[in-house]
Image 1 (cartoon, helix red, strand yellow):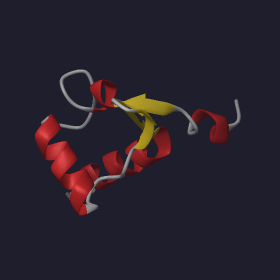
Image 2 (tube, one colour):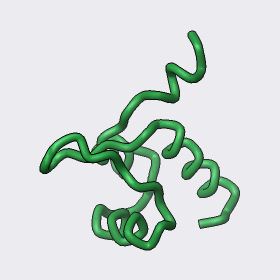
Image 3 (cartoon, helix red, strand yellow):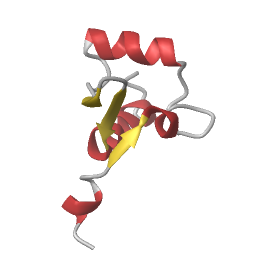
Image 4 (tube, helix red, strand yellow):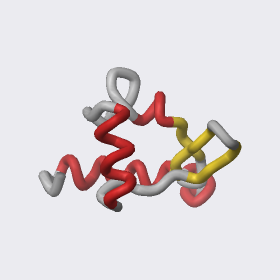
Length: 69
C-alpha cells in the first residue's frame, strides 16, 4: 500500500490519547499544547468534530520517544 495513503488517515482524539491511544496526556493538556503550538493543530470536520492527520500524530510520537517533550 502506498505510504502517502496510509499517512493520509484522520484520527479522532479518543484514539490518540491514553488509555486507548499512545499519547500519555489528558484532554486538557492536549488542548493547551495545541493552543501553544507544541502539539499539531487538528482539522475541523464539523462544529463539534476535530481530527488530526496520522502523519502529524506519528511525528509527535517520535518526539516523545526522542525525549523532546
